[in-house]
Amino acid sequence: MSEDNILTTEGLTKSFGGFVAVRNVDLRVRRGTIHAVIGPNGAGKTSLFNLLTKTYPPTSGRIVFDGRDITAMKPYDVARIGLVRSFQISAIFPRLTVRENVRVALQGKTDESYAFWRSGKTLRRLDARVDELLAVVDLTGFADSPAVQLPYGRKRALEIATTIALEPTLLLLDEPMAGLSRQDIARIAQLIRQLAADRTILMVEHNLSVVSDLSDRITVLSRGEVLAEGTYQEVSTMPRVQEAYIGGVHAA
Image (tube, rainbow, N blue to C red; front, side, top):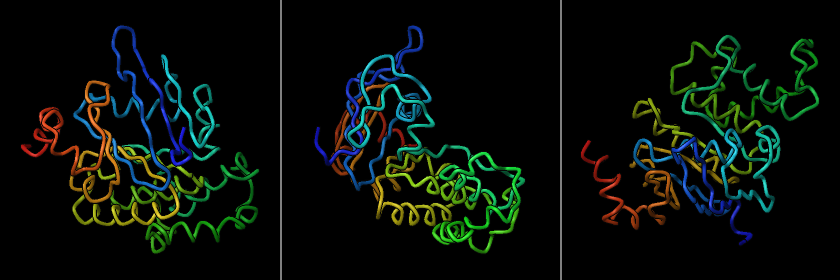
């Protein structure tokens, strides 16, 4: 396998009884790129992400991350070695402040992982890094606000901050633009560009304008299988892709 590929799957398949959600997927994600996975509803995109992050065990096939076979690994161990995922729905603690949310995420990288009962003074050594992360996602002015009070777009930014607190080398973004306003989409797109400067990003995204603008390479799924792969310019002109996905989205 090429050292240029940070993530590789071979024949990755997931069946639920008689239903095959992901079928024989060979995926190659090049290091230092933004790689998008697109496809119509039910194409297997979320199931693929669940396989990569070990939420689902594969029925068959192999997953290699950064030169290491992770097929049999547990989700926590995969996250610890640098493959980290965000979700479609913001996964934050609504009653904690923005600062506290990021601090909790940072605890996962320290020996204080389970020390929620400890004095705040014990954890203040994390605050410098918290402040750095909040600055990255443009949330410095919201640091002491309860997360529940954030506008939706800012909640998505906070979730990204808690995700990058785990120091991923490969960041999986599951529909990062879902439910965002045009202004928030522009803000999160700029954040993704910034994050891609020193890590690889694999994202599922329905907004094709965002996919076209951000992605170096695209994998198109249909009915759990890889239908096409290439740049946006390449895949968007393929008749089979237009029939399965692109044309339907443009028509909507």
